[in-house]
Image 1 (cartoon, rainbow, N blue to C red):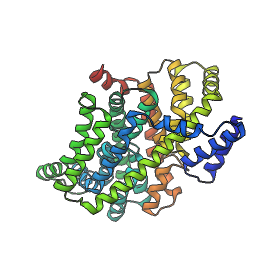
Image 2: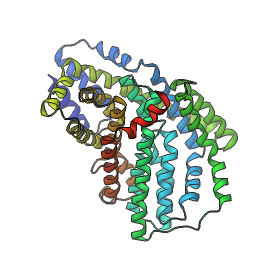
Image 3: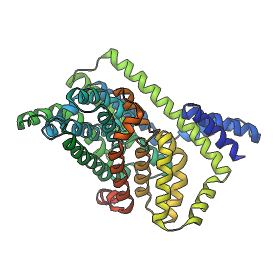
Length: 424
């Protein structure tokens, strides 16, 4: 009967149903065909969201929206442009740098693409950058966000696996910076070849003033990270502190927030949080059905029967996750696949923290993989360029991301060094 669940789910995806509704409707059809009482739906949905660490997610979403609307994005872009603007293709590098810094606040790739892209893509086009290149670099750099801490997807992984949020945050730092600087290197080479513009070098005074202007924004990430890692507060407490901090900075420092726009931000954050919780609830029900049908055991057995070589197993998992990431939203993919694949990884002696970074990096790359990568669609719509042109321009960045993925997969210490250094 499992084929009914999978078939209905795939059909819903093909008809562009929201992923949460696709999960819920496929579960409903399965339960009716199996004759299982429908009371199981609210029971499993509730058990899926009744997890303490998930309380931090609405807080981080609200804090990110407050900081974004409070003028954070523009200030980070200005600061990054002071640092890289004098290099050939400096504005494109500032795009990447802004994503790396903004990552600590947004925590999601799609919001990064939309927020930074709305500012950077028109600015790059105005300065003479090709439109397809501007869109491609914006989409590619946004994938750094959920890798560099703090990260909403990392919190979801911790919920699913029981792993330490602090360790997961630390594990993503080095791979995230490698990805960011790798994209900068490719950007520079392309910019030199195409003779993209550069600006006069900023003075130390301008850089210092830019840092001071951005300081209050960056301090929030510092407070969150060192508070969680140092054991000062839990992720849930950190999210609430982040909200109050974002309000204070937005109202009294940047002076961009007022009672009227805060109301809109709170309502938008409530909608985002509610939709995410519905998604998690339905995904838990979907996962329960998979478990009762013993599909995880079947997948694990098939993979391990094919090979028990660690690196070959990781290669198969990488290919699967990149493929899934091209058409499925990151958190939904994690909710459905991560618990299954984690068991396989543990059998072949892969550290769970290391595997979490591999899985998340794969799904991020999927967001910029043609022809269905979601971030490609977002950036192309902002830049008013066809998805085909953006996909073609993004190939060098995609190859760089895959190279970083291979390095992270083959060298566990890139993910495990900082957690061992600070938390073991």
